[in-house]
Length: 317
Image (cartoon, rainbow, N blue to C red; front, side):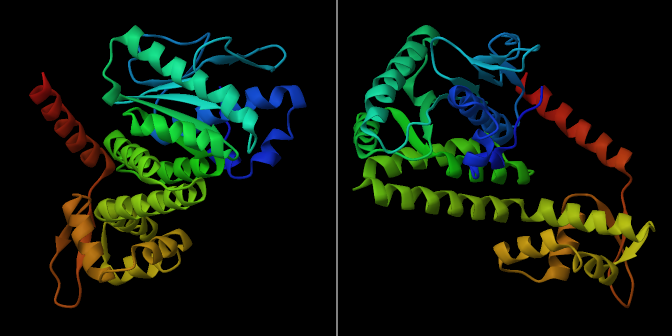
């Protein structure tokens, strides 16, 4: 099934204009569910293709007619459910923006779905999060959700554009864990509890996501430098490549340049050396002039990875 890109949430009107007016709310729900699939890197299921044998997944409680291509939403329950590793997120989506109708329509519905999900699964409220996604929020919605957060429910509100940014970040971070996302969501709930107004909360969430991304980039630094350096070695086309040749190739990479600006620190040659060796992507070949590296073959790297996975699985049995 074709899933729309998360970036459509950032330019939402352009995406919605592809659909008839009456289809737009359902198309928005589908887009939000797709964004969570991209963010969590999980299988995607619909109401008619869901398979309970797949424990970790994103289920959009709607479906697309194969013949007409028309999008349909589920008649009851939350719009989508994310079964992550160790926790759950119930997704509610609405195109109702800064209108009091948003609170009247969405607030109690979100709470009812949350309570039903807890009771049906006999789950702890610590492990279940509820998120309302909308283009914008009315103050009454903010006040209602904040009170439930203060009462101890893991409840969140997020603008569509912010979810789009979050999902795009998750697609780029290769070392992302579901625990990282859970940490972010817990911070978002805390920010909602501590906020003094809707305007300040919006600023806090934007800052929270930006700081979270910076932290992930720092954590991923060694892996990222290792992969980009390995890619540069492949472009040179020899098994043994000097550090200067690697740096010369990286200088031409605009994405790498943007990454360096976000990272904002470090000796490039030292980072390349540490990354290639720590990630076991190359071995160093001593030379009096500069560091040279002999790249590891893909099949050898894969075999090592599978051995590590096997070792972890045996420990967890």
